[in-house]
Amino acid sequence: MPQSHPFYIQKGSIFAVPIIHYTLEFAAEVKRAFEEIKPSCVAVELPETMQDMFLHAASRLPDVSVLVAFSQTEDPLYFLAEPCDPAFEGLRSGLEGQRPVFCIDLDVPSYPVFKEPFPDPYSLTRIGLKPYYEAYKSHSPRGYQTAHAEDSKREMHMARRLKELSFSHEKILYIGGMQHIERVLKLTDESAFPTYAPASREGVHLCTLTEESMREVMGECGYFTLAYERWREETPRKKAYPDRQQLLLKLYREAAETYKENTGNDFHSYHLRNTMKFGRNLSFVTGRLVPDLYHLVSAAKGCVDHNYAYEAWFKATEYPLLRNIDNLPELDLLAEDIWGHSKSVLFHLKQKNPKSNRFTLRKKDKSKAVFKPPGPFSLCSYQPEDVVIENFGRFLQKKGAQILTEDSARTREFQSSLEDGIDAKETIRHLSQKKLFVKVFAKPTKAVGSIVVVFDEDNPEEGGSFKERYPWKMTWLGEHTQESDMAFFATSLTDMVVGPGISRCEYGGFLMSYPPRRMWDIWNDPDYFDLKTKADVLLMAGIDYSVKPLITYVAKKPPKSFLKSYAQRFGKKVVYIPIGQLSPVTLNKLRVFHVLDGYDKREIAGDYIY
Image 1 (spheres, rainbow, N blue to C red):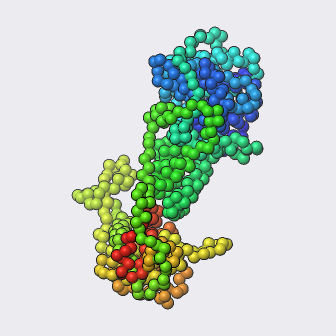
Image 2 (image 1 turned 120 degrees about the vertical axis):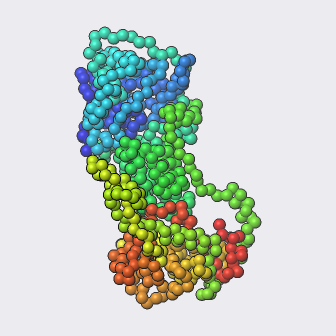
Image 3 (image 1 turned 135 degrees about the vertical axis):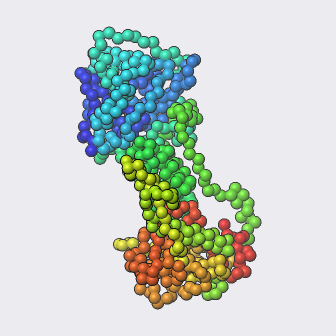
């Protein structure tokens, strides 16, 4: 846990806080240090010649500003003023506390760019700034002990200004970069300082950003910046720092609600679990503890779909405090303008057909579509949907057999044949023995006879009221040898009537069994009356009607142990596939289907189904 008191390096009247720019945790550390030290003035590592502009930008916070400095020989220099930058937090705290504030850095034509191995700033919430700073010094001694020529001038200039301020102020809060701060403090012992001329500037302008540009260039994305503002206003504060990991979880949950509203797709708990886990692992690969914005969006896109990734990005980059009430010029900058090379993410969103409004005018009038209860033998399916779900069933047949084959794989030392390929894991494990190991898969003699997919078990929750979401239970027989027998539970026929004798329904779960035309009505079969859930009925019926030894079971939870034992009694085995391993885009397509009141409706169904 971080120390209760903020960390700073004291030398005489100077209290120095080492920082990394544009990080939420370091901004919080500066705020905590200011409140504890109660300095008589604040000095920050920003160019002295632009002090008036920087103070103007700090006075506008939490609104975002951009200071643009032009020169004849160099590209424009951009300084982004936002709440989560610790230097601007120092200026802001000083102005709010009515303390003198000073920018003491030397303005140079261009600032050196170093790629240093800074630990993830999130670690401050766990260990505090002091161990973090010591870890930085021990792991980057070269960059810490030596300085670039331009940096040497800057450090000498800052040391001179700090020594001048120490003659008239008792407590100076100095906020400086982690690489420079101890060298600057050491240089304050000098008795004489050289004078350096600042860079020549053609002009310096204070601007703000457009909303689109703000989403792209902010150092800390808007969602975390808003959380920092809320933390800043807390009295007393519950935590030493805003917890970035908890904010990320909250962000994903809020994006899920918007995703469900905008797409109509479900967002299950395994989606959130997989997204968080994938984002964490992606961060570890790049040397971080928690995902940045790029990892955050990539995880959402990879584990759910592009629409959810867009909602997560939109929520993460939203910043309602960009108001520009003083009408500053608005700049439309790219991330490359401020941060250099950056990664981009493309969203391939599912959108409505731009001609759909015109097309609906030509659709048949649905006002005369009155629902009539269908007869027991007249219901039928929509054939294009049959093809899709049968193809999906064959895919699950192959996947179930493949999983069992991989589970039964053996590893042995290479002798004369590579068998089914090199076992890299086992070979690396025995690398010291200089032996090669290969995999041997069992022969795929077993096949899948039944497939059970459960989207929602539709069970009552403990301590709450329960309304059955999938009350309609049905058993269908295959129309020909290429189709399976099918049993399912779904939403009611009357919930959404989209045309005359055409209803749109949604599966809660279904069973597919091969070959066709063998299945009785499982929902009225006395053998299954003792089962408590509809999912259990589907799985037990799948075991009974399977003529092959394997049954593929896709659901959020693994099958109950008594059902696996039941299958073993008949020499069969249930192969479990977590539903989170399958594409959510494909599952959302399959889950919706249409029921027709008679074969004659198949000719007109295409006019009403969308």
